[in-house]
Image (tube, rainbow, N blue to C red; front, side, top):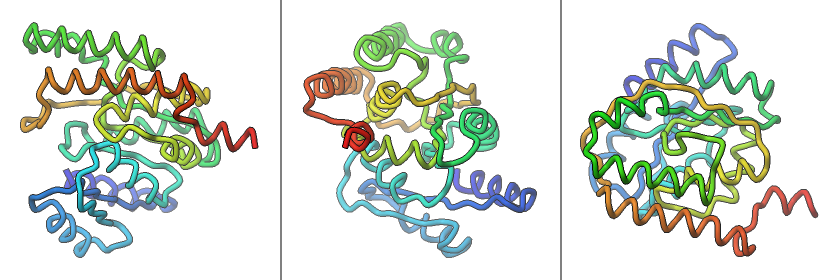
Length: 243
């Protein structure tokens, strides 16, 4: 994934004189060679282009992504899953969509990578049980959180810096349902969003167990709705505006 990512970004930086980049690899308490491998890339490409953040204890995907996004220095901030399921060249499609929403980084906008156009093929290749779980999760998302986005879970989302700061400073969910909270916050703040079809490939090696992950994410969805509804969780951008 890093080879594909860095080759694409290097080529883009050579073609566009005003384009520069950094890649942040966040290790979420990994016990394998993630950190040592990422550090080799940092040594090869330079610490200004490849940075490595290591969380000693596992926080969950949401906690790791939040750490990386709040540490990023760019005007546009992308988070991407490390498995390379999405082709990195599709960044250009997200960038074009984001530019139509926000002409510069101080404005708000989110371009959301989406696999919704692949749903029929996914249903055809999945078991009946996994298909039921998928539709159940989509129903819970629509009921309790996000209604304007068809695919909330694709790990390929591009934000302006302004938007990333507003959303990630208020993020509470540290597990797999953090994407839903992000988009719930974006809807509450009425931020401009667009869904962009991306290429996606199923990658073997997922650590998610379908039934238990569905229960966990379902409980997180209810928690998101309940805690924001009763005021236990607050949105920092709204409080700042009121003050």
